[in-house]
Image (cartoon, rainbow, N blue to C red; front, side, top):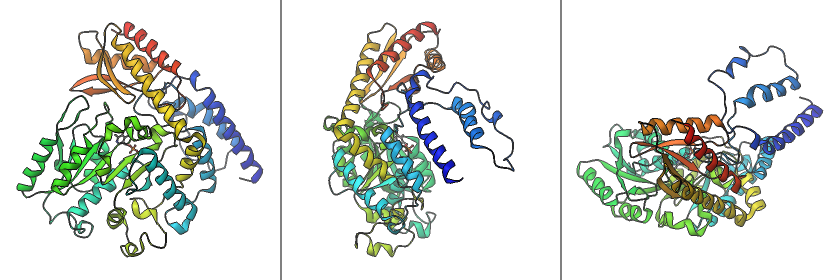
Length: 468
Ligand SMILES: *Cc1c(COP(=O)(O)O)cnc(C)c1O
């Protein structure tokens, strides 16, 4: 591609992006295509001869875009958000143009040094003590896998990577029954095995794990000859926002010498507001914490902030050349690839720098407080609407509800979710609460306005009357 063509299409792409964002409210939130519809329009084999950019771009608009679900849509209330604030998009354009591999300090000193600074900014923003150091991982799943690997190595006197697990007693990890599936996968991939993830039952409105049962399970395992290694606690579980009592979990962990990792992938962003920090009270006692600025804060995916109390333990677990340990932290050099499973790393700190400077913490706090307020107000309105029941109360901006109807309540609510998403004005997803279907609502879109909550209310009530 020559310079003039690159210039033309770069400008066109940027212009397209602005118009796309402006027109989002005119589109159905969830893609309205059927399986195979897009694939059927793509050539069977790669072209032998290059094609004109005009054709390629046109196909992007006519074939691809109709098959996209609009994650930046202001009425995206499904799953959790994956916000990409415009200022973060601009930073990503620059990162894409520079396209550096930032695995070592020397492969891009600015990327490493800015990452150290930005993670310290985030640490201060969410109120973690200075004893924590941070690294950007590609996802919370990777951060949790790294934490589980540290638990494993620590429990095996730093010999697991060398000897494997076969000769050792079983390692045990503890979590509640509300944690994300990324915890299961970390347990599989680390070789610990699903049978050794001990699920502690939950209780109370916030569905936190029963810490008496936790302590009893650890003791029973130790007596049975297993090696209890760590606890994965959650703040803001995916299904209904479950929160463990972190202070209690940490107390049990200290008593038994276990490592504590806190998964706050979604809820962590809200901790920039002091009033929400009671949800993870005691977090300063954890060994590691992960949260995703790429969910609620507005930094484009991928951007997971992983804080650790002991970078040395992480490096000792993941660095392929252990002698690096000797210089780690000295001469001011950090090689962040030693803090994560993949070697290659994109320059992910730039979008945080742009985002935090452009909006300031007060701007981001305002956004999060609005989401929480609008979500609580919607829950109240649905509670007062005949036929509706609030199943789980709002945790930050997430709650779940159910509508009474039909002979089979689960089938009725699944049909309602489908009707809502086929309608396209809003997008919701379902979950199971105590075995029964409930419909989730979370507010978290960067561009959401109060009127979008109003549209959500009208859409839900209107379609609930139509679905039998
Ligand atoms: C989204 C989420 C994850 C997974 O995050 P990724 O960054 O996609 O790996 C893990 N835990 C919780 C609680 C989540 O909400």
